[in-house]
Image (cartoon, rainbow, N blue to C red):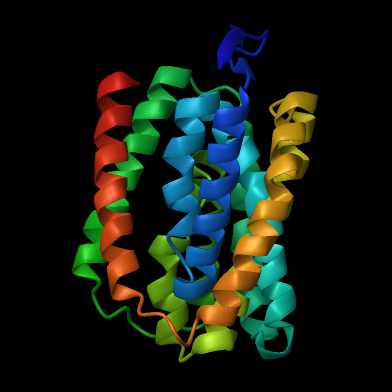
Length: 254
C-alpha cells in the first residue's frame, strides 16, 4: 500500500491485492453485523478505513459504503419503516449533516483523526452503560436529528448512539432496523452532496466506495437472513473491544 499526499492534504492510496481483499472482507462482516444489531458495523469499519485512507477520505468512503449498506436494509425492511418518525428526524438531520460535512472539508487531519479516536471510545462507554433512553416526542427527535447529522458528517456514523432512542419508541426487529437505516440513509445522501461540492469526494474516494458497495449489500443480506438465529451479545462485546483498541491507536498515532 502506497500513499501520496494530494492537494487536499488527504492521501491518494494505491492498494495491493491483499489489502483490497481485507477491506472487502471487513466491509462484508461489518455490514452483516449492522443488519443483525442495527448498529456497530460502520463505527467498527471507520478505524480500518482511517488507517488505510486517512481520516478525511475514510469518512467519505465510509459514507458511500454505508449508503449501500443502509439502503439495502431499508429495501429489506421497507414495509415496516416508521415513515412519520423518519420525516421528523430528517428535519434536524439534513441541515446539521450539511454543516458538519462542510466542517469536515476544512478540519486539520491530525485533529480529525484524534477526534475519531475519542468518538470511538465515547461510543463504547455509551454502549456499556446503555441507559434506558426516555421515550421522547417528535420535537425531541428533531434535536436528535440535529446532533446525529452533525456528528455523522464528522465521524462517519452514529447509529450506536441513537439506536436506544429508536428502541424507546417501541420499534422492534424489522421496524427498528428499517427505520434506523432509513434515518442514516438520509444523512449519508446529504453528506455525499456536500462532500462533492466541497471537493472532499474525489474520483479516487468515489471509486473505492463503489468498489466496496457489493460487499456492503451482501453483508446486509446475510445479516437479515440470520437476525433471528444468531446471538448478538458476543458480537456486541467484540465490537466494544475493537473500538477501544482502535480509538486508543487513533488518538496516540493521529
